[in-house]
Length: 448
Figure (cartoon, rainbow, N blue to C red):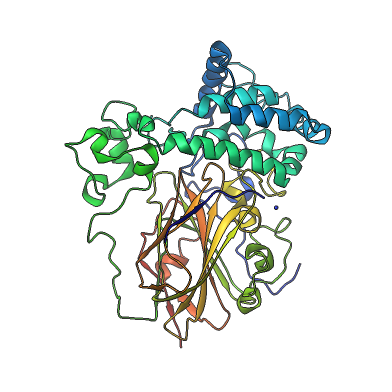
């Protein structure tokens, strides 16, 4: 059974969380400011790339002056027909400082300063697929680039927590998703400079021709759309489970870097104040299983836009429930200001507010028991697709679902009775998101 959903929506010493994380460039999370390079894989490393792209998009949107698509027309009416919403949108742009680096882009052109320009840019993106420019300069999340400054303002923080606002963004993302899933979007899948099958792009993705199913004799190497390319499948035998008969081993459900590991997680915590505090009742949307995980462990990973985007079961067992939770798309933590890194530094916060799906599994190994996988659909990742159903028997390493249209973040949540000892190679990589741990790789062993 396959279920795809695009959803819209809303201190204690006992919880152990990591201090300010150190990234591969030597900076801590707290020291990162608006002018640093972006090392996330969702946005270009160099902010100048974002600025040049945005400047060009503003210029092109102004020159074309194309009529708005129906979804953008509805968005405009939504803004202008509700005074409270209109005020927040106006304040969101007005609160962006007029001083560098916020006032102008690299070419001296103004940044996005009003909602009508924002809507014109959204309108142009509805029928555009990203091109590849270089490993560190491809912009897979263009809407995030448009909103990078305004979403960090006080009005932006408030605006992106309103369910009806998120519903409008959901509609835009769904409409854009239709194009990215259509054959028309496959034109960027070519071997020319700027194409995602060019030598430079293949080198950036690493091991593409060896690892992924493709056919060079077919147009676009057999990929039918941009999204088909980004949800590509491994060839048979790639990423096998190393020890399928050892039920003590838990494997990585996604291909990503370790964002955080937290122990003694609370049922309720001030996740909007404390860095990387996890609040189970909010994460699991008050599901009946919440209390079973109180005092347990959260393992959170990050997926790059260049990553493999499918999920695999970390254990052998049975799916006991699947819960789709509506939420936000561009809400960043109140502890993070205006920064190109706002969403990256908000990943713990997003587990409680963003659109997500929680898959509850009961492992055959009673020392593991109930475990929860969370897939968070953040920013342009507007849909999560589940490929298993409640009551289904699953095998460790089996594909269970996927993210569409880009990178994201995911969690494994363990009960306090599940005594997992993380592999040294995993524990040492917490916060180093450039160091990718392959899917189906053992991440921990259960101590009886």
